[in-house]
Image (cartoon, rainbow, N blue to C red):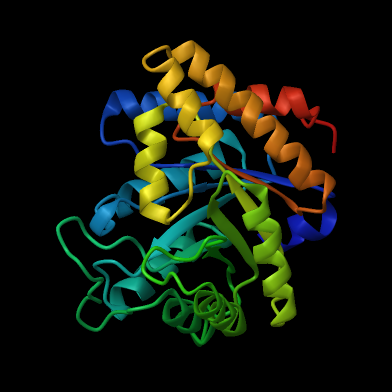
Length: 295
């Protein structure tokens, strides 16, 4: 099923994101996590790319296994990093042959050690170019639903929120079907972002991306990468609990539960959880929200 149908049919579309592990043990844990979260009946899950596109083969294989072995609808991440147009086309053909109908189309992170993103030879500089390339493909142009990223607090490389929003509108104009936001911890940023997006004519679903706080240094890292502000309440908890993993996880679950309650109560079309290949926090949040198998 294409993702756009999920947002039409369900009151709240719930989805999870995973990443391809680098080890056999990590992969075993991933599939255990996916199986556990399947019991929550998500609308779909997504699988990311690694830096420099170096887990592309794993992404394709894991996407296929999740769809056909575990039985969940799945979206494959596809980035501009390290791929020429012809390579992108081959990946699209492979995904289509495997029956994958959903793609998360991204520019991708700037490779470590580089200051600015440099497009590969005969490749793309922006996600909007990738979306345009897919939509204008003569045979695969409508084979996929396309999800793109949104930045409620502005892209870390473009702190002008209005300009960044115009970049998002370009991606939508080129053919994106939905927007999933980067993580944020203050819901004001999401509601402001949606309001501004609607004013300039972005009408597709804008889904909040949620990352429960379960490890202080990890949250610091991801927040820096996507330009998200960490509220003082969370910073104080990270300092207070230190290495007390059980306490910081409990705090993070309670914080994310309140965050998700407000988002859904005020009209968010669903929730997209950045799971980091873990299931405990997400499962507990579902229980708190009474979401599991209720829709």
